[in-house]
Length: 263
Ligand code: KIV
Image (cartoon, rainbow, N blue to C red; front, top):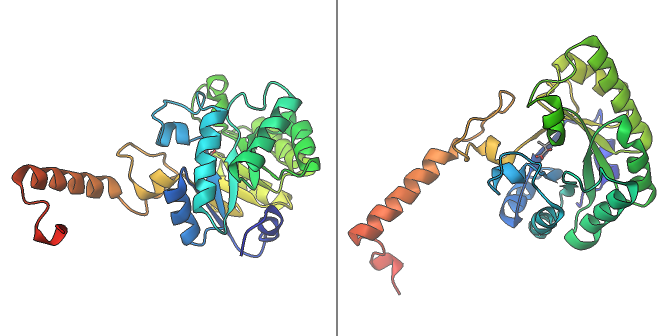
């Protein structure tokens, strides 16, 4: 069954929602094969697979290229494309046009946009034009220069109130779900209880309606430190490194290919 934004929305209160990022056809098909209902082509691809330091340099061409690849690898999951930095901030028209490109050219089913109350006009315009929107508030990595780094958000009561207002505004504008990133678990639970749409937490505690993790973090395949909120379900970096070293040694020793790998 192909997941739609409307079906994802109905999962609230029925069951928790697992979401995972993917960056190409291989990772998309692995996520889809695990029956995970929503796959996010995150702009985290800048750091996980493109070698950038932050998500800021990621552009539309890169996102379209990787979203197309994920779409080719996915049969059932809802494919959400992350709108990259400066693809929607300059104007409503630019946001609408670029979001449309993800659906028209890259096979995406929805887009994700960072920001709360300041994005309601854009979210309304996208939804009115048939483009489902996943909101994203809390720690929004496209704003790290302004936030002063990757810091937990909503720790003071004033910040918490602002995030609650942002969450309500994003829901009111028509988003089908909302990512809550790096906020205290009590606030994650409060926002989740207050909203009718599902919340998808990342470092926002168990009270959210779903959880999202970055593919390479979950598999422990990057060889780099991961944030505190990550649970590594595998530790693949040493496994892959050992396989590559063994391959090199066997080629150099002349023991690969053996008779069994020869026509
Ligand atoms: O870019 C990304 O992967 C994300 C998720 C971690 C929410 O925004």
